[in-house]
Length: 568
Image 1: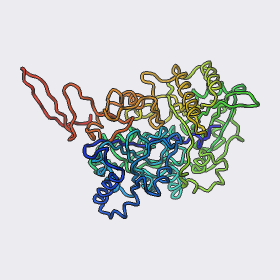
Image 2: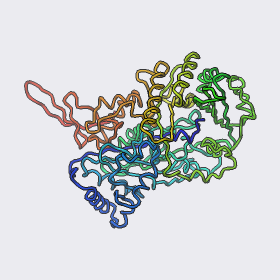
Image 3: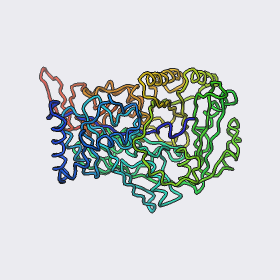
């Protein structure tokens, strides 16, 4: 069974790469550490002995435990995995600013930004270059103001902590975000963020009011001082291309005192094909209060290989109402009152996190960060714009049985999602019927086993080509997948960046590039899948100061002009 916990959650986390001109590779790790510590102490006006508690070298006794704490994919926690030279765990916004400023002189070192560690391909804590980790997990304040229906949430807080802190203040308020409680807010929201209330309230970023970010100059900016273009960019375009997001102010949403959850399972030989086929025309179009996730998994039942399809749902209302609704719209589901459980919204969040006895579970479990816990896994994504035909569902089931373990998660859109303009945020996939997550987990640490499971993901992804979005084939940023393409972070290639950029952001990629060029023209903040700056073309060269030098030939003479860069 594909459970929420087994899918090791969804979210993405912002990542930074640095390459500036002072220090050389010849410096020893101790020399780099001492240089950074001295600078960090000066910028924070704190004694070195005091701030050393938040700056860890490889020789520090706590180094390994700090590193492992937020590694969520065991694929990237092996003896051969390159380890960071320094880990910084800031405890204030000024610490983050100092970390950015003090990283600049360290040429050839990459700065990786990590909050919850759920980046599916581990980009928040691995690199093939010498690197630092800026771990934001200590920045976990959640300040809830019920009077204004809002909350300020620091980037290192987890979704579980957000839900718990809201519940402390109100039983009829919630926030539309992911179902995995250990996901960090910083990556989740900066990449878009979604959960089981998206059909009612949209994405997490559709409910943003304000934000704070450390920019390339180390300045701490809010929405007013950063401007609407940058605020737009970090509302779904990934924070790590533009700066270090410190936190977000969000709008809380109303939830009823009682909601309903249910799970219904069917197998390939007893209605699953018809159920999945019909779901495509019901899930994205039914009452916006209803979210029905579809899980599809190859299993062995009575010693026979088959496929199980499971509908896992949240209804913002009572059981009788959703049973009556689906009796008319979705008879193939055969939902009955006894399949349903009524509970509070917070209890439903616990249920979605695989706490079967959610009504008896202490909500304080949402404060458990599950440190140093990881399974091996791989995720990919797709979007479906037109329903898959019934024979396509049949062929899909057969292919999944053939492959053996790779599973699928269908997440319906529609409702509020379809009402919001595709360029309102960087997230462009508003009009799609549903999103597909390809999901496979394993426990064995073996290169051969890993190769086999990664191949299953690639084969099934290839098999689905004819059924999913085209031109471009779309993907979700927070389901990080380096198979789509990566940028050689030493070259800032627009051509390479456009490959994954169009998949993640569609036409919004163009505006993201303009924002990037305006706020970080020297491409200080970068990673394997970051937004590139505008390419050098038509005689234009971007400079560190945020201007462009343009030249043209007139009458045999070269005319040079310096112009300011603006975001359009």
